[in-house]
Structures are given as C-alpha cells and as structure tokens.
Amino acid sequence: MKCIKKIVRSILLFLLVFLYSFIISAQKDTIGSVNKQANQTIEPNNCIVKAEIIEIQPVKKNKLRRLCHRFPCKAIVKINEIVGYGSSFPVIFSKGTEIKVYFAHSLKPSKKVLPNLKYDLPGLLIGDKFKAKIEAIEKLGGSIKFLVYYYEVL
Image 1 (cartoon, rainbow, N blue to C red):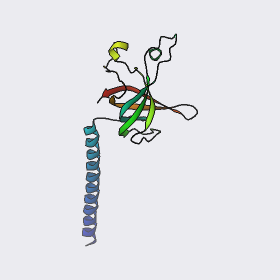
Image 2: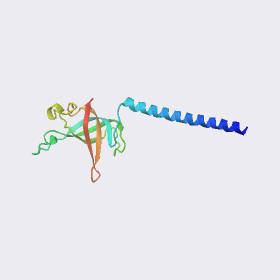
Image 3: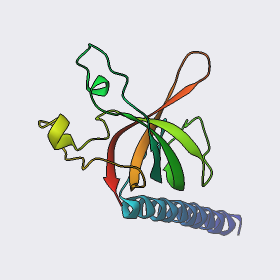
C-alpha cells in the first residue's frame, strides 16, 4: 500500500511539474507574439513616440562644415503618444510634453543634405507629425539630450 501511495504521489508531482512548465511556456509564447505583432524592439535608453514639430530652432552659422552648422537640426517637439519605452529610459513623458530634440541627420530632406544615406528621410517642417525612436543621452550635470536618427512622417 505504501508503495502504491509513493507511485501515485510521484505521478501527481510529475503531472503538476509538467502542467506548470506548460503554462509558463504558453505565457512566454503569448508575450513573444505580442512583441512580434508590434514588430519593434526598443533598445535601452530609447523610447518610441508619435510627436509633432512645434518649433524649429535656427542654425548657428559657423565656419565649420558640419551638417548642423549648415542645416537646422534642433526642434521643439510635442509628444502626442508614447508607443513604448526601452529599459533605463530616464524620463516618463506624458501626452503634451514638449522637449528639445536633436535630429542627427537634420530636419531637411536627406536627399539634399546626405545623398549617400542608407534610408530616405523626407524632412520635417513646423506642424508635421511623425513617429520616431528617441535616444536619451544623459550628460554631466544631470541634463538629458534627446536624439533622433530615423523618423517616419505620419
């Protein structure tokens, strides 16, 4: 009788472990499929937003031939929607937040300023709505620089 009880307990324990592992793997598959549906992974210190250009800051003319000394690269942007955050993003935006953003390839169409760029950026003007991945770079003194490499106009 003791032998049968041990066998039954062993079978029940095996079934519980099997069932538990099945449930865990099903949850992981569900989470994975949600991420695949979004078709985006967000790197650390990045967030994806839908935003609007409120103001384009003027170019500071300089003798240097750098891109942002010839074309506008900085703009005030209003956050309309937060699509998602990567880990360690240092700020939580709320709808309507206005931030200063640095556009690495300028706000002009890339065909005009960087014809050899791998992707085509159409350029942005005041009032344009766009979706972008914003990288947050923490600077000494606690300030944060927001940087955009790629965007798509909505």
